[in-house]
Length: 216
Image 1 (cartoon, helix red, strand yellow):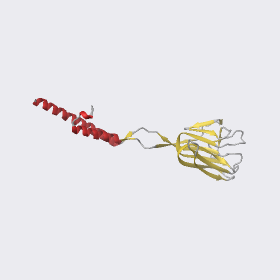
Image 2 (cartoon, rainbow, N blue to C red):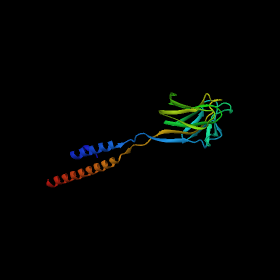
Image 3 (cartoon, helix red, strand yellow):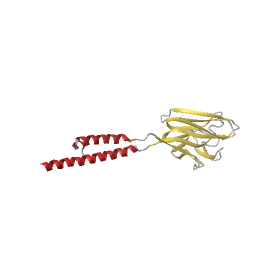
Image 4 (cartoon, rainbow, N blue to C red):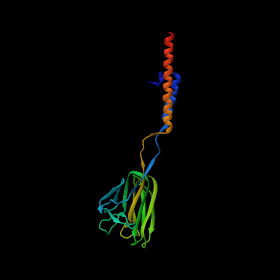
């Protein structure tokens, strides 16, 4: 039924009800979900490794190799012959606003562990690092927050010997989750009020028409 054919008061109430209901139907704000890659399912050696929406590849000529790290759980390194080690890239499907990773080593050499994040255009969005002494055995967590993170690069740099010899574990990220528009609680009350007003107006209109027909 078209609104313009309704009686004046009903038409005004109907228009107001529709406007209020439309205003109450709002899209929820950004919803973020955390994901963590533990590498427990990683093969001993592979060209790349994908888990929980993140694909890990070597920044050099190595693959992705899994080992038990200083924290006693499975982690990854990138090497081609166990004499050259490479930094690792983690590409996040859908992007992220936060990334963290555990990095460490077995008291073999000093390491400058680092984490750097980039957007889809390969522009660096931030970098953080920590110098680990040669006597240290363990893992440290590095983290960064930025808008539009597409991928992260992490590992160890000089004075590390042999390249990026740091173990990586527990790669965590925060990604946006798409949600459909949802009505606020007030939308249901508004819709009910509109329906009631519309029904009452139609009943009154019919009664007026019936009374006029009887008088004639």
